[in-house]
Length: 88
Image: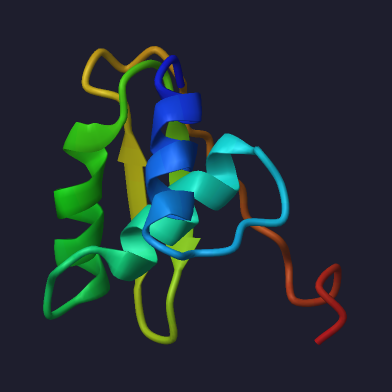
C-alpha cells in the first residue's frame, strides 16, 4: 500500500494499539473498526481507503472473504489440502 503510513497513523490516533507497521495489521484494524453488520460489510467499507496493490483473504467463523485492489495488481491464488496432509 502506498498510503500505509497515513492509515497506520489514523488507526493509532483512534486509540488502537498496533504491534507492527505491516499493511496486514493496519488493514485488520481498519476492518475490525469499520461500520457494518457483517464482516463483508466491514471489508467493503475498508477497501476504498486502501491505495496501492493488495490481495487478502479473511476467514471468519462461517465465511471466507477475499479482496484485491481494483486494478488486480496482486494476484490471489488458492490451493487445496487433503485431509491426510492437514492432519485430520
